[in-house]
Each structure stands twice: as C-alpha cells, then as structure tokens.
Amino acid sequence: MAGFIEENLGAAIVTLEHRFYGKSRPVQGAPNTENMQPLTLENSIYDLVYFARNVKFPFDPQGKSHPDSAPWTLSGCSYSGALSAWTEKVAPGTFWAYEAGSAVVQARNDLWQYYKVIGEALPQNCSADWRRVLKGNLGAANLTDEDAAEFAVTWVEYWQNQQYYSGYSSIYKMCDYIENQLPEKFEPAPGPEGLGLEKALEGFFRGLQAVNNTSPWDGDWTSWDWQLCNEPFQWWQSERPGRPLHVTTGCYTKESMRRETCLDTFPDVGRYKVGIKLGCDEDTVNRLTGGWDNNNATRLIWVNAEFDPWLYATVSSPDRPGGPLQSTENAPVFMLRGTAHCNDYWLKNADFNEDARAMFDGVATNMKKWAAEFYEQHNITRTFRNRVACPIQIGR
Image (cartoon, rainbow, N blue to C red; front, side, top):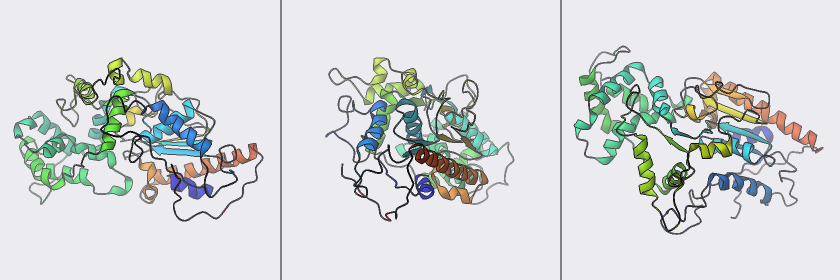
C-alpha cells in the first residue's frame, strides 16, 4: 500500500522500525519489566510525530519535505494500521492523511470472536469435522512434540494470512486432509455435514506432519507480549464454557491463563510492575485512543475485511455500538468480502478480486484529492522531482 500511494503521489517512502522491534532495541540484556517501560503506545505514537517533524532527508537539504510544506501520509495494517488511526486521533496536525488497514483500534480483553470468524470462513464440512475432533478430546492423542501440540490447536490461525492471491493455501490443504481428500482421496468428497469424528481424526493426523510449518519464536514476540500485557491491548483470543464451540479448544485459550502468562513473563523488578498488575485494562487504552468511536476522523481511509479474524476489534465490528462505522467523505470505509487480514497491503490482490481493485482505486482517488487540497491551502505549487530508484538510509 505504501508503494501504491507513493506511485500515485510521486512521493518518497519512509519505513520506520518501531521502538523495541528488530534492531531498534535501546536496552542491553534480556527484556524485563524495568527495561521495557519505555515501550508504550503513547511513546510509539509520538515517535512518528517526532520523526516527521525533525528528520532531515539527504535528498532535501532545503527542508521542502517538512510536514508544513508537504502532505505526509501515514499508512499501515493491523497494529501499524491502528497506529495510523490512533495518531490521527491522539496527535493530529503533523500527518495530512492516513490509511488504516485491518486496524485493531478497539482494545478488548476478550476477543473470543477471533475464532468465530475463522469458523465462518472455513469450508462448512471442515469446520464441522474440526469441531468434532475438538469435542472428541484431542488431548487424548498424546502429542508429545511441543510444536505438533501447538499446531494441533492453532493451525486454524493460518486463515489470518489468507490473501485474495493466496489461492490453495495451507489452511485449505489442512481442511482437505481432515476431509480425507489428501494425500489421496480416501473418501468421497463430503457435503457440508462433513465425514464424522473417526475419519476426520484420521485425516487430521495425516495432515499434522504434512502441513505444520510452525514459525520459530523471536525477540519481537516478547515486545508484542509486553504491549498486550502492559497497555494492555489484551485481545485474548479465548473460548469460554457456555459459548458455542468454534474452531479451537477452550483449554488452550482461557482468558485467565493468558493473564497469568503476563504475570509470569513480566514479574516485578523493584518498583516496576507490568500494567495489567497495576489495574490497567482495555478501558485504559480506549480512553486514550477513542477506540472504535473515532467518528470525526479527517482524511482517514479505513480498509477492513469480512473474514478478518480481528474484525471485532475494528471500526467495522458487527457488535460496535451503533453498528459498523459508515463511510463519509472525510473517512471512507472499504469492506473487502470473502478474505482475511491486511489484504490492503499487497497490490497484487487487485489482480484477483474486484473489491480489492475498487479499494485501491478509491485509495488513489482520495489520496490525490487530499494532497491537492494541501497544496491549495498552503499556496504551494506542486513540482515533481525524479524519484530515487534505490532505498535511502537515514542514520539513527
């Protein structure tokens, strides 16, 4: 998306690394409750503002790219999409326009709908048989390999990565294993009712080794866990007794277990405590950002998707008070049908789906219109320079 906006505006792209992620970790040693204190949402928002206000580009010695002289746009998807929207709300006035894809703007302690959406997105026979497997006590299968055990209850999360261009991806392969259609057809293709527990369980274990591509853990996940526990965003993807079983086991995703994990991962260090232990909760975040109640945004494009597992944390959530946010001239909302998370961030999705094509066209139209308004309001004549073909590195 950033490149698409750049192409349409004849602009430069700047990609920022978030504090405490990648190489932007300002402390030495293992992360703990004391040295992670600077990683806060408010600091992260004002990092963006500070950069835009103070950066000196090597290609612009006269400072004509300063936000007072050029229309800066802020774009992102998922958490970075939320950062874009939150910056418009919390620290307006530096960036001129914003794009927020799959933006999880509403902190929620209990995002049980994550798996509900996946269950609705999967083929009916697959989700029906997978629920049978879960009810059939998957734990009795004695999965001793840690990665295999994790995959057994999290493979459905592969759906989150589904793009329009993905085609026959891992999630569909696993469903075909469960339905006994891979590695060869062991049974006739079932209807929406599925095959039943015995056959589905056999197929699941055939697929367990063939499809499992669990990613290794890295340090960035610790930073993310800190934000979940300290702000706290939470978004615990939980299942509870009394709710309809969707596509994961409640034993794996109890909300209380996730909270205990926060306290175990980030124990007290002297006077420093993790936010969730200090009584911070989702309301703490939503009071700062406005959550999904940002009804008066200016020059902000929202892009969400029908089957995004994170849908219920976005402005398009079906249970948002007053209903999903409606489009306005200042804040258009694009809803992509039949797909999942961050489909706005890959331009080639436009080659595979009309909704995506219309969304990209709409983003281009609005961004060009808003950029023209900036130059008109600031009485600046827009001139285009030859764009640099290779990335420009800016010293820290």
